[in-house]
Length: 247
Image (tube, rainbow, N blue to C red):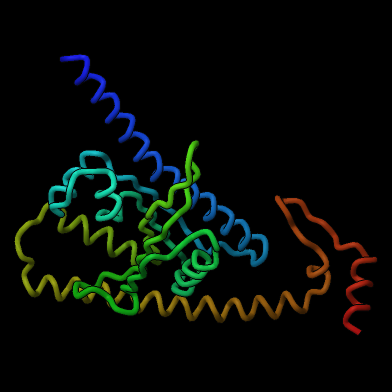
């Protein structure tokens, strides 16, 4: 191998590494935001809307295959323009309302830009698939420049995730057309999962109303805050000051 070829290979390797690092750092940034959201909700509402998260970065091999499938030019600029799911984040929530709460959180972050929203909950796919898909543009501070990196975010409930995961396993590497009666059963299972989501959402809201009333009736609890597992009593002087402001 000539020296020139070796240098070219080294340069391409460095460029590819830097390219993939941008997407990895974008996922890191979103992970931090998700952790802050979880802790904030836990402290303020004694409730965490997020069951779990899963982060995924396409491998160079998978990325190359998608470039060939889409027929786009193989350059880093072209890949950034045409392939939007190099970095992916899946957020699994407890309840339906949590999904749109997560969406609002992203929309209210001034340095994030929502590029696209596909709501497969209000408009499910024909096979019954439900999820909220967001394309977010995330700022990434590299050593010598600021980059805006696209990340695909999928937000769904436990029931939606359960259905989607099993649907994928059932039809993994199945390249033939699916018989109509199986498609109907698959859609029926998705409808059942959706009905369960709506029922659990209703139960959740009713219980939250009861808990809110109990909390309001407990004045002692309202005079304490808990931060990082430490309990702090509100100073009497502060309570007197607040009482004076409300008169």
